[in-house]
Image (cartoon, rainbow, N blue to C red; front, top):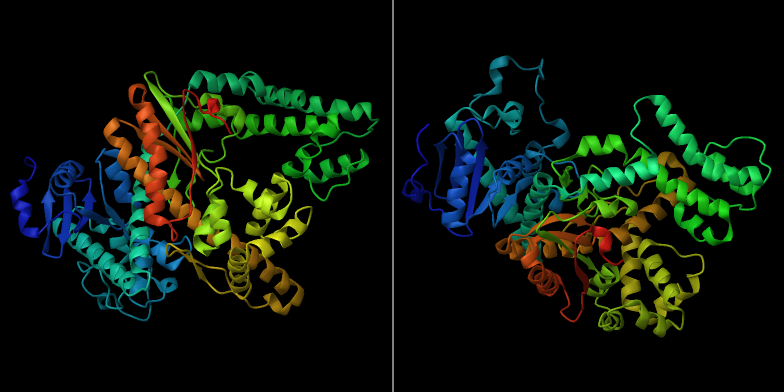
Length: 580
């Protein structure tokens, strides 16, 4: 292959700032490009370098089929400003998690996705020559060829350009669908954000989360004991952890040993010791921690057991290297659209947080959106009283004053309304919410009713929320009623969770763009919390732009400009140094 292609050679394609430019990246030696003005292949040993030159010259909106292209771009360090991820947009518009290029194509061409041909499939009803031209990615029956989906376009310059052209056709069809909607501008903005978030996920996977390896090993060792060299070592460490709980049973006269890893045995053990509980969930036991040294020891044991088993030496060896914890990231969980991650990145227990530390000469900027769900509820419902409450840094205080209850009771009531909980100590406050915030409560109730009927819903940003069938399973009325109630609870929460996820992603993307000139990188997106790794000299400035980005995200996202969104932002050396 020769030197990089001359930019002037690509001008005939009509590449322009912000315009769609579809790409097919063949690491083996080609870059396929397609615009409304035509398509061509650039032969090159480094297609990502060619793409970087195009991005620097024109800054188009890069179109690609799926995350595989984003992974190559992120690994190559290309600072992409705009993109359109066909699969990510499909998940937004259609709902659910199952999506790939073949499924997207089938959906747009009114074909049954469940009937897509697969590799190695032999249709005995047609002869081998009835499959059309293998060089054509579209079969005579309208489906994409499975071999093309599996990468048969690579290694052939003509096919590489054709694959890019198909991506452009598909993206254009998606944009036409969005343009026909009454909320087209908002959905288009969400589609752009979903695409860029998938790229951010690729960057998060490449960069990893900064980890002080020595501190991580110290924490694991303190809880799990020395690194085991044999199964016997693990068993001894396990018995030692168990003994801190079981000694309380010996004092109570328990005759038989209890398997602390068996919830049924733990529940029975607690009942014998005066605690008749419906389950042994942590939040329930936390309410009783101060009443019994046994429960206090059990909760402490659980935290230690989690470190020793899930976040122990094996976890460290598998996921931590070069001072970074790396895992796979996704822009949407398939339900409400929240970001997800593997390798424990979304569930790192508090005792491990001291190990999350900035590298020398750097700081962590940690920011947490305050009470995001009720503020989102105010925005999407338009309830004037709840909107007024968002003016407070602590939204739950004006709500408590309006209801005439303690602040903690008001918080439980609001969260209970969002999650569909209608019993317990907050039941009376819930009735007060219905009187004091009727618009917001009606919004949630209508969402729940639609979910109970099995209707799909749509977030304010345009994400389709699938609730499933409303029919009775096997004609069982009781099961049907229970299933409908579960769908209702899911629907009311998914609409708010989905909208909150849309707000969070827009915020994270603004931070990504604004902080890059300062040498800072987003390294963790945790539900409503961001960690940004920044040079020490720029950390204060980055912290301010992170806070300012909340208002910018609200300007672009919020259906009601009067709703106030807040964040708690701090500059720290270790994640554990941050408050909250």
